[in-house]
Image (cartoon, rainbow, N blue to C red; front, top):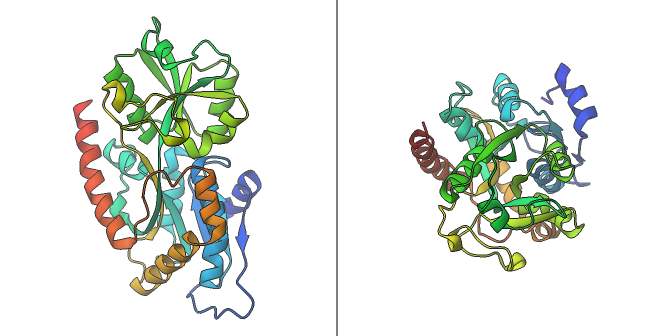
Length: 317
């Protein structure tokens, strides 16, 4: 059954929708006549662009249309609640990131990552800290030597972004105040407009703004400099603690029939191999670190990282 709920129409108007039609002559044997892929963040961010780049290939592989719907709110908790309120029938996909782990561990929700059945992890997305081009913060040295409390933007409160910012700036001994945003586009505008000193975001999202001369990368949150940004210092090279990296994947409600999960896994793996998605990954620099995992390996990663995040968050309480 192709689900429709009252909030969906508004979400489509706000965030747009991408529909992937089945290939002509394709045997549409998937148990739904259409699939909705719910993204818990607004249009323009990394999770949104990932879903919209992958959806056409998934739809082609499944033989049914896949519609991407933005449903931002509460660090993607709103979207997860919507997914879990639906049937476990494989007709609803949910974008999953480390936020599902941090939301659970920090007590923002009673929902658990175990309420979801992992389908596939697509990639690992390396992040950096950025300042506005031409702004007061022009280099990492300006951050490290700042004599004021810096205003630092990230998406979500008590989120993956806030943990990353906390780990790196605490390690560097920098005074800061974290400012949470629901929409990455608002955060970017506030950085460029001078209302923030620096922000955290992933290279995949920020690359176009770097190329346009709007923002300047200050520090790569990696062990060593990134090949594409060799002149940007790396956290590991500075002797700082290297925060965890963001990954993106997809899940369904736990209890979904294993045959449907297997079909989805195969469809996502096929979509990840298409020239269109490979071009997307290369263009957004999502291929800097091997990150693709199938359902079983992804499930094991979630369990392992849940314990790791719990340790990090516990040490800060």
